[in-house]
Length: 346
Image: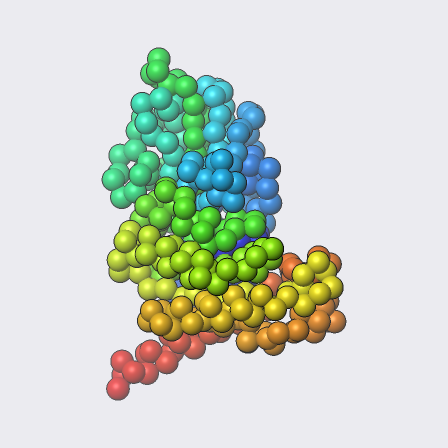
């Protein structure tokens, strides 16, 4: 499963509840897609940590100058330091074991790229010269010697022409049957930001998603000019790119919750965006989870604020708010699954 979104998703608070619930019921196949947000100067989920001895250049798909270089996570990291080391760690949070023994790496594997030494000790030993799997551009999957919460990636200039290392994301798996719940979220992102990033949809093939959840629409509602025609075009463009690369995937579109504009004004464009997403999904045979209506509809932000579930900026939510939203989405998915099972029995 792949959950795509904006700042509501990047911190992995709402989505963590869905992942935790599904893995508890169906099995835990690993933490899934991760990114070293700290090196990119941004916030990340509490279940992963990253450190490095080097300075990295970073970009996000919301930045037009860098969009063409961003990949599966909506970010990229680049360094020209041939001795750079990047350490990734998972935390076994929420009583979930996120040890892994398989690491997927998405990176720029061209002739000007450094090679990679990979290992779960201070001295990496597994050598990656180039991507060895053609599942997705620049993707390679390595089997680790044992389950671990810790991996080190070290640049190695084995070729005289190598000048840099550019990473797009990492996939952490184990050998257990169950759910892999990947999250790709970018603060401030809109449908068009993902649709216009040429590497994003092709790299989703590395995840082989059977279900793609898209939670976008909040940021579109804050522009000076709300263009409903362009909104539909952007949604359609992203869906088409994802379907072209994942023809067997099913989709759930979620609508944005009601939030304030400039902390105190109701934002009618949130309802308009919700209606556009809901209408697009129904017109194109896609599933939709209308969080806008489920959480109270227009002006319901005042209730979420009243019960201290909405953050002070009036746009984001407190941890408890995201947890509640995640539980509601989880309940909806499990109900749909149970309803489907009943039709099979008949």
